[in-house]
Length: 442
Image 1 (cartoon, one colour):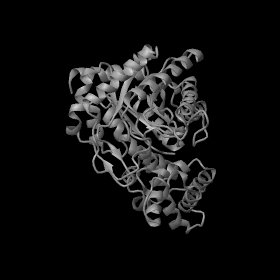
Image 2 (image 1 turned 135 degrees about the horizontal axis):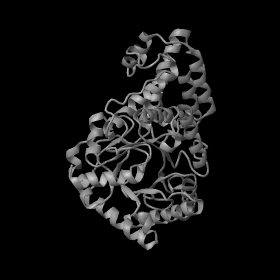
Image 3 (image 1 turned 180 degrees about the vertical axis):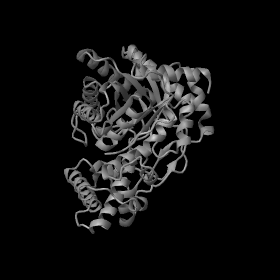
Image 4 (image 1 turned 90 degrees about the vertical axis):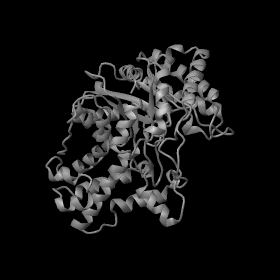
């Protein structure tokens, strides 16, 4: 890596992290999830690593109207801080971010109406103390093409940045840092099989910065431009329902080199879920210092919960209200979160509902009936679980159980499963503490 890219990364991360760490890391994992166990695992990992934790809420999950979680930004912040309090992590170590903030939840509406809702959402995020704002205005609204011209995307982003700046001044909050982009992957991963992905061209990345600089100047929000720390680009990384596009550094070599012409900026890589550890390290090496992960964590959680469900059936016998049966019932009852994403025959759709990499099942965990089903499962397994069954049904974390690092208890096993998916991000991004280890005994 060139010295200029290294300097850019250090400067951008210093703006993001502030005084939360004694040394600047190589990068940072951005945990985009609203599930309490996923957030708890991320906070516990940050506590063990003595590192700040970046938790981001996505526009569809959390917005001023509640999102699919029913939480406003202020609600979400209190929710996360409550989990941190249970762990003992100082809330000052948490960085709150807003992901894909723009008209996406309301893109079926006319553009002006959708943008007004996006303005209200952005203001609510900033007023709640969210310090990292990803401005995503790349998608078309009613009557518009799916992908908008760069200039229009930038003008709308500048409009929302102005709202954010005003909200910070009005509420006495520190002005946020921003991430911009015009080649933004859809929230939650691709909806089609992945064959090849076109890596963002270096000139396109430079053009993104140039059009945003012009738009921010025209809107009178030059101060906000000075706090842009990153650009969303496509480095050739994505996941679909059934496969994952793995990062190949040679394909992104020219794109990485473009950072030498972007002082103080890094690239933000979306959809890094399911990337192997070496790919995550290579991404950070190449200047993709902010690594977004979300569905990969709840996929690991679902895997653990379903393993526990199978274990409960062995120990206590099959139950008609098992977790797996409950989740199938909920998804069939309300297909809106998966039907347009999972094509194929009924059997193929059933497979994807439960086991897809895109993890659309995550939208159903906040349902009270799902929460009760998880509680019932934990109650059924309120004892030490035999190691042999953990080996059979939770192979990802069995070695940790056998080594005494994870207690053979249901909640501890779930947290450890999520941490196993999250740990490679800390290996890739940490500057020190190479042996950072989290033990799960809850």
